[in-house]
Image 1: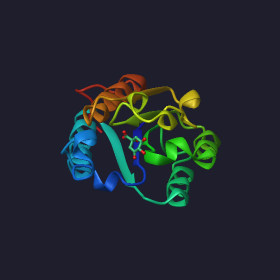
Image 2: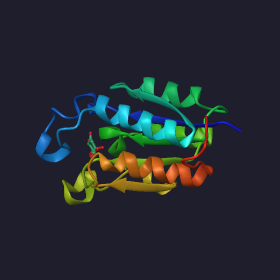
Image 3: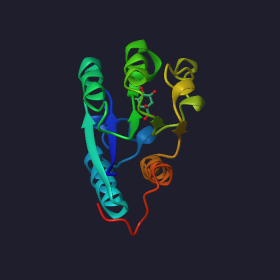
Length: 152
Ligand SMILES: O=C1C[C@@](O)(C(=O)O)C[C@@H](O)[C@@H]1O
């Protein structure tokens, strides 16, 4: 069975690497996606990446993944703290997902401590910087039984 992973980045993550670098670092989203591509190629996992600043576009992309994707890694950006609709979309397609944040949201403003997704996520990675994406993909590979010797 082919293993497909969808990596979603939400609002403002297109600015990664230039936006508030003291919080989010200097690595760009293109760098993150390139590294993710290499990592998943090595593991024999098919990767799709998607970034949007629009809640509805993200929800549409999640719906498209129904039935053809085994796992989602999502950095929902600010939608983490606001979006019932994003939660409903992820639950609606029944695809297991990891929630990921570059920064440690629990060490920031109190309103960032609440997530509409965390209680439904398989797990949450936050505060590891962009290394969180690498760690998340490693976890997904473990979950899907993918290994370094695997060929796509
Ligand atoms: O846009 C973001 C990025 C973020 O998800 C992170 O990656 O640390 C944390 C969110 O609170 C924030 O709104």
